[in-house]
Length: 331
Image 1 (cartoon, helix red, strand yellow):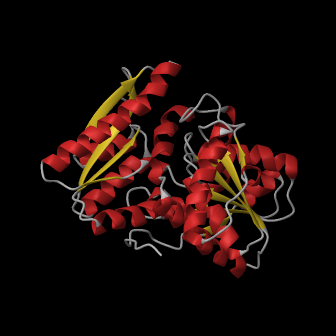
Image 2 (image 1 turned 45 degrees about the horizontal axis):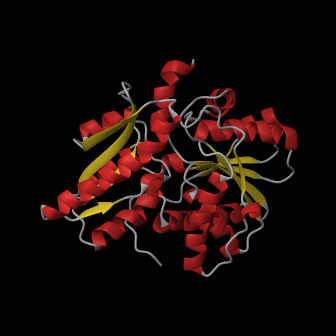
């Protein structure tokens, strides 16, 4: 349906988590290891970039532009893939005034000599945070115009890979997982996945619908409150449904909780701290406070109350670089 590059080491492993499962009372607990996709320190954004960058190359792009934050896995991986494909990476970062943190991902960008532009905002100031996205959009638009006038061919990669091609990557990812689960004799199961922009959840939901699978996709919002998170996810889902000829979901069909966000994006919570510690001590897994730690911490809290009698798969979307950053302040 869409052309793609060959960047990922797939299928990624599907592993059991017996020690963590025993600790929280879940008989069959598994993990989908997208932290092992390859390139950099892996992460699910690489699946999306296979499709998005292929599209950019087909359109004759010589420059990739994206937006994000200093700790963004997407920004770091887009920078890596840009250099691999001989393209010029440019990133526009949202940064709180006076807080230029040296994260692992930002160090990768520096090593790759990525052209970086900063748009500042006042942390904690609602008006400033609301305006920063408009400022970033305007900045990107001006960059694209300038580069085009200079004879370049820029291609904008949406933040987090949130677009039709990015979501479709997880339709295929669902097929990959479902084959692995069926091989182990599992037909009915739950998938628990972190939700940022909603595009990953959208792809998994559409994948399950296309396969007619008895699989429930459960999302843990890591930043956006409902109903905004649900609405943004439904938009992403509708794009894929229209492309695949599937029925679009009602809002109530999307199972996404916003109860574990805490103070916001990339902010640690009591749940993420507990989840990160338990994952490392029971299964030797590295998780971050931004995505995977929050989602696994939420999963632990939910499953301890539910005690499900069917398999549960946690989708490890990556963020090992953020996990390394966190370890300096966690223990």
